[in-house]
Image 1 (cartoon, rainbow, N blue to C red):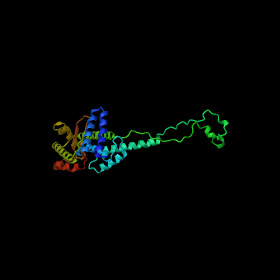
Image 2: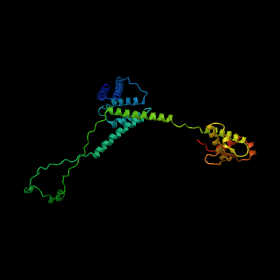
Image 3: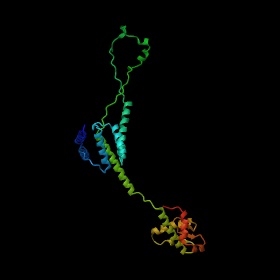
Image 4: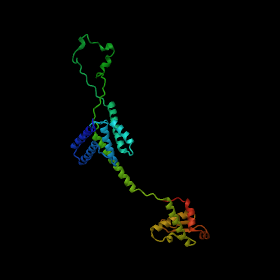
Length: 306
């Protein structure tokens, strides 16, 4: 058969499906398939940038080239050929390829289950001499003489060899494959939207280095404020300048200085009493040390709080 004949079979199949559907969205989708097959028939089908359209075009090409019947596609052979083609492609739509493999696996699994589990019950055999009294006929042999009489007495049915039969299933059509492609496309679109959503609302990654540098500057600033008050206990409230952010900066810096061993920190009444700090190192050493140098050398071994 020629390409025109093969494409004609596909067009007839799609036209039939279009005639029996009542959904506008599906009708529009089939119209796009018809346009694609018409271009394939004329040899004017251009490669598309859309991965889904390329997958559908590959489907039509395989059906035409391998002369598959649109009404009864051998899905096992089709899946082998389709996967062979996509391996050579630069970009593979794994969802669509996986959907085809899954459909082929389902068919093989169903056929195996039918061959093993779908067994027809044996038919009842009608006895030709039902109701006759065979005792007067010498032609009948006594089964007890043959040793099988007892078995026949306790057997309600004649032993009949069971036959395994397969029911004929509805074949896989071209529109079934196209529906599977469409389902894979919807799954891909959902995953892309979910990925965009997660990317948009993902918590930002903080730069540890920048965070540590800012922390060193904050500790140095608070250490300079403490130096201005000289000896003795200092209320943490006296170290604040203005705003909630500065209070947090002072509080965190005081905790780091206490961990470094530079300050003592306590609270006289819990939980809302004033917090006091006091310099632990000798005051003459404090006055000689440069605040930035002290902090930068100590903070290297302090874990960064995010």
